[in-house]
Image (cartoon, rainbow, N blue to C red; front, side, top):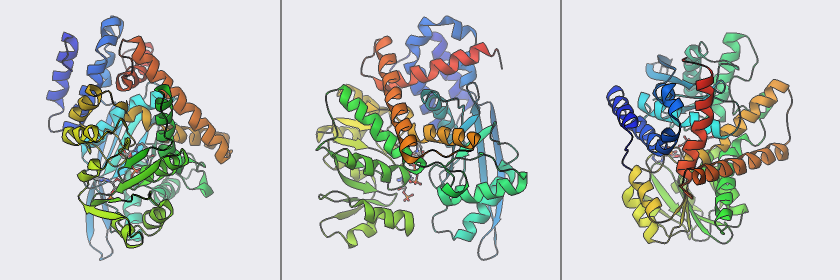
Amino acid sequence: MALKNKYLIDLLETVKKRNQGEPEFIQAVTEVIETLEPVIEKRPDLVEAGVLDRLVEPERQIVFRVPWVDDNGKVQVNRGFRVQFNSAIGPYKGGIRLHPSVYIGIIKFLGFEQVFKNSLTTLPMGGGKGGSDFDPKGKSDGEVMRFCQSFMTELCKHIGADTDVPAGDIGTGAREIGFMFGQYKRLRNEFTGVLTGKGLTYGGSLARTEATGYGLCYFTDEMLKANGKSFEGKTVVISGSGNVAIYATEKATALGAKVVALSDSNGYIYDPDGIDLACVKQLKEVERKRIKEYVATHPNATYTEGCKGIWTIKCDIALPCATQNEIDGESAEILVKNGCWCVSEGANMPSTPEAINTYLANGILYGPAKAANAGGVATSGLEMSQNSERLSWTFEEVDAKLHGIMVSIFKACDSAAKEYGMEGNYMAGANIAGFLKVAEAMKAQGCV
Ligand code: NDP
């Protein structure tokens, strides 16, 4: 989409100059700025208040050394990050990613997206993100613990239940959150809801583990219904085999679909009989093994090396749940050619701009990540409420609230898209609806 508004063109140029070497961040900002053009045309007061100029610059970026000792007694050094992006509507909130590809540009793109996503949830949460280039894969529990303790030794100076509340993301699951929470408690001598995604024995919320995958399916189901369709009897391809992918598989199956493929960063499995989720959970959640092990016990299933080929499998609905830019223009074309008519995003920014253009040009029902995967952070918000109340809600209560939030997010995207003349473009709707709440709050709070 080519921008016409001079103010937005100049703003994007400044962002590109100021953030050189950070293509993911520039990609995320470009997508948002392009879809906000009609809003900016209608709202000169927001330009006057410098809302967008401030919104594209994180409030604070913290980069730190994370030294730890491996099992051979050797000192290892990783780099830690926390980007506190925007606190206009609540304390910073967003996950911690542990993956070797992490650098400041990844954390900034995720933090920027988080601002809009958190706004869409209707809960009072600002946006932030953190992480490290540490790779938990292949490390012993002791090594992961020593890394997490070192990471938290610095991070604890910058976070707090009313300041900044991190959570999980790629590579950060229940084990890592537990180690980080333990170290925070020890250093600060306080038992507070400073992290979400905690274990159920120490302040975690029921349904938080399931929330992002379930929420993705609730959002998608609502989008399908609004367009006269449903999950019932449909073939679904899901990438990844981590937290989001596993619970998206569970809910899509419960809603009547057949999930036929999953992947990890090495390759993908295809099971024409439908994925046996109990086996995947055992392999990934308990044994921490690779997805290729699945075919050893499922003779009809096949394993293929390399992840990209997963998008060549014929399906009705594709749910990318692994990582950023995993569907490029070429894969999007293949999906369309094979009859796929819905793409809904569990991962953050899994589609390149070329892929998104292909969806929009071919009338694909497209559920953008900011809206479709907001169920995780929404349920983290519910975990924060329970921690503040010192109460625990039942699984059914949390799940019902999650469902209600996802339905309301879909409605907000749908009506914002309609109001600005882009009916059916839920990406534009998500960006506009998420932006307006934050923008009003920033304007009301003055130039801070
Ligand atoms: P997990 O670490 O549990 O799982 C990630 C999965 O994606 C693994 O199967 C992993 O394979 C695969 N993967 C990771 N990096 C790559 C890569 N570069 N190429 C191919 N596959 C890759 O993470 P989550 O399930 O929590 O997160 C998945 C996505 O969902 C991320 O984009 C995350 O930001 C997003 N998300 C997560 C939320 C949550 O609540 N957890 C909330 C909202 C969004 P391997 O094991 O080989 O690395």
